[in-house]
Image (cartoon, rainbow, N blue to C red; front, top):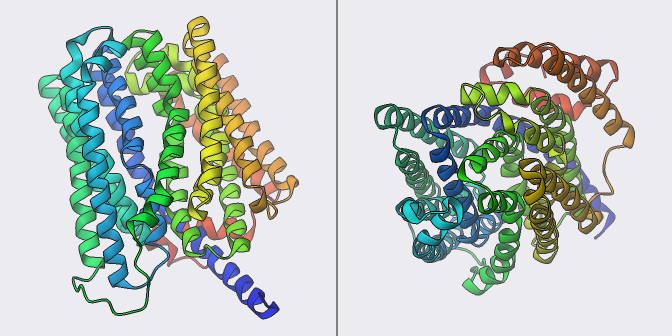
Length: 511
């Protein structure tokens, strides 16, 4: 590469950084509403279902979650990658058709296998075959979830971020409304299963509409692009799919062990803690990955720009996930009371605190994992997933029988630390452009101080559910004040905050 080419690459990198930053901010704000609805959905289940029924729902959600990663075998990531790096509409249509056909085959196969093992799953999680019918319905839930992830990956690859966020929000509104109405009328566990199926069907149909609008109907090839073959896809997504299996086991492995070693009610308690902590993923990390994966794929040849994007992503994680996770840890008793409406799930308070404190490690790991996916480094992705999965399963099997839910939360936290260390090692070539250690030290101080204050208030003043609001406001104000006095925010951070504002406010304020 010549000096002039490097200069042009540097200029493009500088010009595109604000674009990525603003895109992440907009997606984050839009995703807040969807995640709030997810919290409403959780509260409805906890309040209207008996503990055992919610434990069965948790078992189903865990297994469908694992199956939804195994079934598409990484096709959703392949779609985001291979549709993002081509401009020709005819080629885009051809590639999209291949993804849909492959996804239908793998999703149907996985759902059939899931249904065949329904009785076995019922015995494992509930110690009885009476819930086998529920797991049969779970096979349909699995099919819709798996196929939906691939068509959403196609929409993501076309960089239709706003459309993607919009359809997720509307579908979630319908799902939550149906769940509330159905459970209020029947108090039947199966309502929650059918609501998820309807949710994913809506996403499939909406995504199909977006794809039909974005892609032409003509079958005449108009340029010299080489068509992507099924063999090309197999070479990419099969190793990635295997890595995905290991990766999902890193997020569900402890739940599987808890479900087999303890009763459904205990699984329900632990799943509640994990679900609440996962809001950090839905609100903050998912929008980041949604924009970062196709952007990184589109500029696959420019390692310097990928490194800069990774720097921005880790900076964003530090400024958002760290304070948010510590806040969740500080007010965990209030969160559990808020969603459950009482003290039924308070035994999950300490596990939630442990998971939330260490959530930053998972966030950094997930960001690096996604960058490696975009780069097509499937072997490195596999290594990260294998190491992390082995860690969480090993420690879960060792700790859960002796320490119960606390042991499971410790196993999850250890796996997050080990996974981040492995991710940083295999992605070390892209970590040369990180911010100075002084920045991370200042962010850590800014986040830890309000955490300590809120934790003291929770443990020694009051832990009633209503205290979430004043404690959050107080902690947020202290965090922002420390960011200001320690001079943490850069021009890029301010651009992110500007891009996070609603559209009507953004254009009334000076940049």
